[in-house]
Image 1 (tube, rainbow, N blue to C red):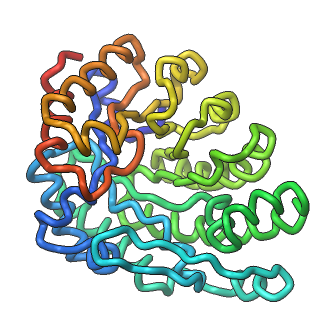
Image 2 (image 1 turned 30 degrees about the vertical axis):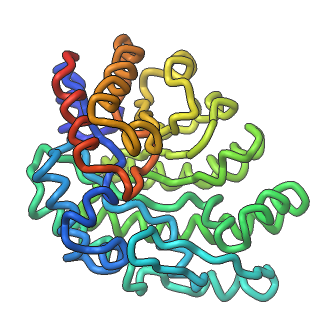
Length: 334
C-alpha cells in the first residue's frame, strides 16, 4: 500500500481516512469563480484554504479539471465562470495532427503551471498531516478529448495501430505533467479516465491500463500514490483493475462497493463512493448523515477503504451537506 507515510500511519492505527472529491462547493464562499480558480493559483488557493478551514479532510485535491492537458494541446476549450471548463469536439486526422501534437511542450502552458504553483503553495500552507493530491487525465480519455469520445471507441476497434500512436503521444504528455506535479508537491496523483468505462475488459487493458501503467511506475519512483478514477458502472472492469498495479481505485456510486471489496485485493485501497448527485446535493444534512453511516456500515470489515464521494461534488452541493458528510465520518466509530 503506497499511500505515503501519513496515510500508512493512519491505517496502521485503525484510523479512518476521509477524502471527499471536493472543491467546487467551496468556490462561491471562497469569493472566487471556477473559471478563475482553474486558471489562477492564488484564486485556487482561496478554495483550498476554505476546504482546510471548514472541513479539514485527510486528503485535499486540487480542483478536478479534465480540460487541462487537452487545452494545452490546442483543443478548443470553454471556460464558463461557474462551471468546470469543457473541451469542444474537434476534427482529428493522424497524418495532419499527430506530429503537431507531439511537438507541443505542454509544460509551457500557463494553466498547467497554475496547477503546479497551487501545489507548491499547498505544500507551504497545509498542515503536514494533510495529504496533497492532484489530478491528471488518463491517456485514453485524453485521446477521446482530442478526437471525440465516440470516435476514439470506434478507432480502438477499427484501427488499433493508429489509435495506439495517439495514446502513446497522450501518455508522454501526461508523464511530463505528472513529473511537474510531483516536483511541485503532489503526494497522490489520481488518473482520471472516465471514458474508459465504455470499454470491454480486453480493450480496457489494451488502451487504458497499458498507458496508465507508466504513470503508476513514475509515481512509485517518487513514493507517490497512484490512484485510478473511472466514472460510471465499472463492475465489468474490476478484474482488470485488480491487476492494474495502482495503489487505489476511486470508483463511482454505480459500483456496489461490497461486491468490489470481494474482487479487489486488500493491497489496493478502495476510495468512494457516496453518490455525488444524490442526497448530498439535494437532501438535508440528516439525509447525508444517514447515507454516510449506511456506507460505513457496509464497509465496516473492509480494511482497505477510504471514505469519499463517488466522483467530484458539483458546485450545487450545499456547504452544510459537506459538513454533515465530514461530521458523520468523524463521529462514527472506526
